[in-house]
Amino acid sequence: MPRKSCPHLTTIRKGILPLNNTLPSNLSSIWLTPAELHSRLLIAGVMRSLTVDMIADALQLYNNNEVQMVMTIHGDKAYYRSTMAHLSDIQKSVPMHQRFSGKTTGRKRRVPGNPVRDYFLQSDNQHIEVINNELAELEEKDKKQKVRDMQQKDREQSKLHLNYIVRSVHCQSLTRS
Image 1 (cartoon, rainbow, N blue to C red):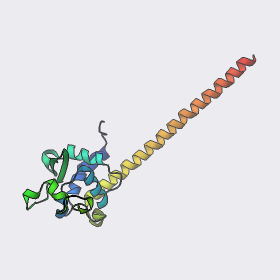
Image 2: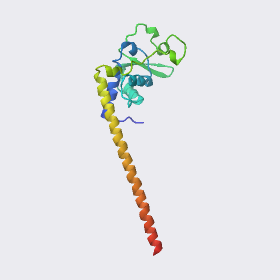
Image 3: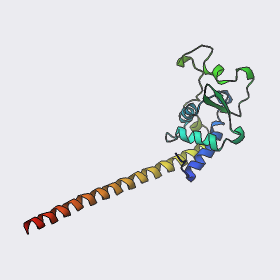
Image 4: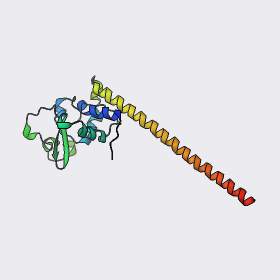
């Protein structure tokens, strides 16, 4: 599927990775998938209209030479962590050593990778304001497009109905004569 080219999306894609890098260092060292990164950003205060696809596009388009996020592949999955993270133990810096807090399995035993709720809203981070404004404008644009689509559909339906009435009246007048 081709990517949408839109100035709002470009601004969001360019700003989302630096925004993630402003999280506390204890959270930026945890390896995450794009879906987990999406969840983290929503909890931290980014608007709900942010999608995983936007994050995946940002990682592909604006993370050249791993400037913002370091990537590793483990078990056919791509994991990312901030380049700002300074890891003391390089041996345990692979995703599987960070997935669980000393236990073998279990979702409840997982290392927490999310900040406090609305972390960005409590700080005076400029990235969050820009991204949330762009997401709001994109959402408004989508709503207007949906309204236009519905109006167009209603017009087409009314034309079909009117065309049917004209044909039936014309057929009745032909049968009477």
